[in-house]
Length: 140
Image 1 (cartoon, rainbow, N blue to C red):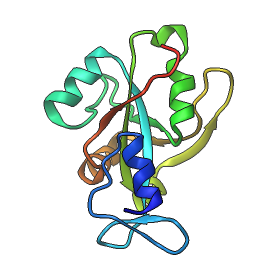
Image 2: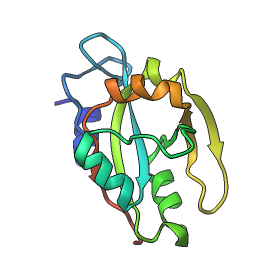
Image 3: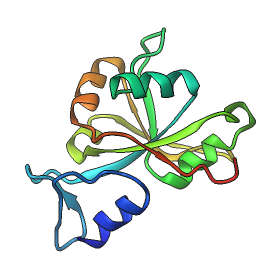
């Protein structure tokens, strides 16, 4: 097992059919590197995720945000408003992540490097993500 795949397994993320390139990127069978992404979910979204295997849509149909680091998701989850949250992780092909809006969420409770997917992008996100896993929520 590659070191990168082992890191994902330690974090609880499924790696699927992956290999490690000489540069250290994790690639899938189609040679599109997979990127770990993390989402902080409340109890309602967690129940939906368990029932359907995806994060669904909010009532406003406004899309979904994902942190690009576990530390960022943990920072966001540490906000008092997220006291009962769960951190989940999955992986997406780099080509899918690159179609999202990449940005930095600053501040004490900000997720840092993040990606936003608009509502029309979610079917592609959900169709290409690996099964989400629950990850450690340090400090909660």
